[in-house]
Amino acid sequence: MNATPPKPRPIRTAASLILLRDGPGGLEVLMLRRADKPDDQNSGASVFPGGVVDAHDRELHTRCAGLDDAAASARLALPAGGLDYYAAAVRECFEEAGVLFANDAEGALVALDRIDPERLAAMRAAVADSTEALLALCDAQGWRLAVDQFAYFSHWLTPPGMPRRFDTRFFVAATPAGQEVQVDGFEIVEHRWLPPAEAASPALGLKLMNVTRRVLLELAGFASVADCLAQARARARVRLNMPRLADGPEGRRPVNVDEASYDEVALVDPDGQGGGRYAHEAGLSMRLSARVWRVTGADGTHSHFVGGDAGWALIDPVPGEALRAAAPGPGPVRWVLATRGEASATGWPEARAVAPKTGESLDLGGATLRVLDGDEAAARRFLLVEERMLFSGSAQGAAVAWPDDAAVEWIAPARGFVVRQAPD
Image (cartoon, rainbow, N blue to C red; front, side, top):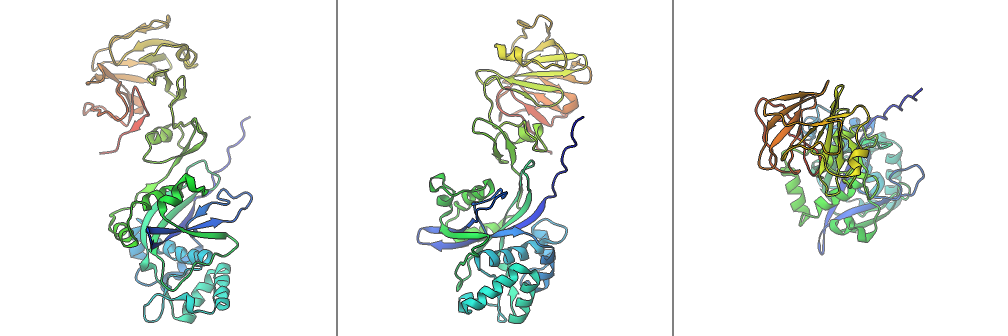
């Protein structure tokens, strides 16, 4: 009996505040090093201030200046509760880095350096223990949380398959004058101000999560704090980035949305259980779906097995024993097809080479291959109707067109990764 798969853990909402300053050589970012802890997937990593949104962060709405929940939610593309993230970013930054975004009664940013160190330490300790302490602190001092100093910068969701997943909103802000970074010594044990490109460089040796490195590389494109804030505020929308885990020659790693393999990994392994690849090695056999297997030849060219209850069709067979060894088990290969030139059943004695005409269909028993006109790269193309997958015969990235009456969602090229078509 198969064991019941574990229930997925809930995705936790989080907020992170990226503190910036202008240094002698340009933009600098605050990096905090987390304490080494067992069973912590981010142990010892260099991070930005941030953490999980607390249920009580909503109570801080009335202590926020310059932004209400409606405006914050609209900016974050949420129906409500957007201001929770801003409030959480303020709280976490104060707890971890000792930097507090708050306005005094005159509307000026508070200079914490003027507060007695012991008293300030007691304030931070109280806030770390309870969100209510930050409420009380604002009321006692006449402060309001200066969330209007933040610019919404990035939105990341931890890949499926990770033991803990976070839906995190990243904000950027200029470090307030009159405040020095003081790490808490518990969650955070060290801080450094670094140019983003230097922090992201493997040569520096920081332990960085994928999301942190990617954000740093984006920050490296800004010349100054003002430049970064202006461009962040001018963005019409901030898209969601959700990497996916995949395997390859360098081991398992996250694949980001702008990588060529991203769509294919999403198709093959939507739940992060394994099976996706970020590289195609010679001889690699991959199950793209219940109806489709792909084998990569020595020159990087793909052959596709497409099958149903009546048997399997082999599209563009490449020579080599790997192809024969990788033939799917559910049934025999009965047809051999070619997107370029004439099909040949050499090496497949149980199959016959066929060259159906444009508009004709091949019924494989629960899988239907419709023949479409070719283009510059292929004499003909084949559409797996049930999965809206087009075997194009072209290289990945090549322009592909199809008839208006052909529903196409996925392009399976002769070389490269499967690509998903953007909806109209």
